[in-house]
Image 1: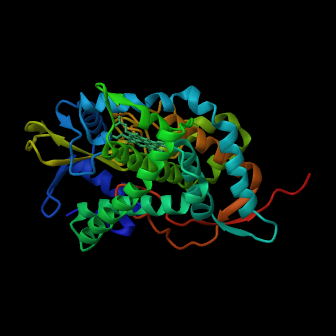
Image 2: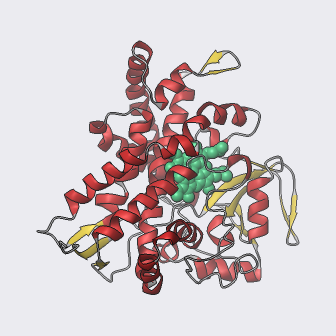
Image 3: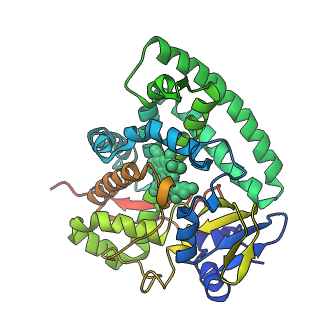
Length: 391
Ligand code: HEM
């Protein structure tokens, strides 16, 4: 059986994907997992896009990403205006300020090493999404712990020994978040602010205010989606550039390639490696039948390395064009946070490349993968650096 859950495979799942794509792009993993994995670009894109056949109703928390139309459409509509490219562009000065504050703390002349993941790539998106939601910055550590616990919930998919514990912790954290949120909701009712929480408190679907449970669902989804994914994008970008010094050199010489470099990181080391779907009917794919109701994993990380779509897919090429990766999904569930994470990554990389004329990994130990199984990227990434010489 293919083991995607070992640390080695999670650091480098790509040879496994490649083998699967060549031999059988549709694989059934027996119980306790009992799910179907889809590996080729065309089928993954179909599973992400054809929402009538591949439902997003999966065994997961009640977040709108896991709903189908018409409810999905209504709930997404409530907050999509908070994520338009124009709204996000206006956040740029604040994100830059947060980025510089974090780097000033870490890149002190008295140090020559820092942990990029722990000191920068994780806290930056956390502070940005916390401010957007309307969480006071001093509450961020609590916020981070909640996100970590929710993410470990993905271990329940492996059916391993951690599964039961993960579920218990999730239930505890949900209660904590509920209590915290009740307080915040009361505050926003009394004094509306210009933040997402106020928008949710005031929002109506079919003439009805959202229930606290529904607001909690948004809150949990944004806490997780807003931090973990972008943190990995930043970490993975640095990993890719360190692994490909010619591309790092090219990017330094041609900063106009930054946007295209970020797309290539999203393709090459996709922060989310798979999304779940449930077929609403039996599906024939590559000569196999996936029965209705079974869990399907659309393997985004594999689709993005499919040679049928990307010439020389294992080459990290910051000039790649076209680059129609599916790292943000496709269709009606396309990532709402894409403009935000692209902006955060471009600010982060600009600042890092500017502040660090030379940097390298501080250890050649294999990096520890992050905890959530569907997420790809390092939990810790110690970097040795030399600071910009004063000019
Ligand atoms: C590199 C960063 C990110 C990646 C790779 C990513 C990836 C994805 C993917 C693959 C989906 C599609 C889910 C599906 O089809 O079932 C998605 C949906 C979503 N993402 Fe992101 N995401 C990122 C950043 C963010 C950020 C920063 C936010 C919010 C602040 C966010 C919020 C959402 C939401 C709300 C959805 C659900 C959309 C829907 O179901 O209509 N994401 N994301």
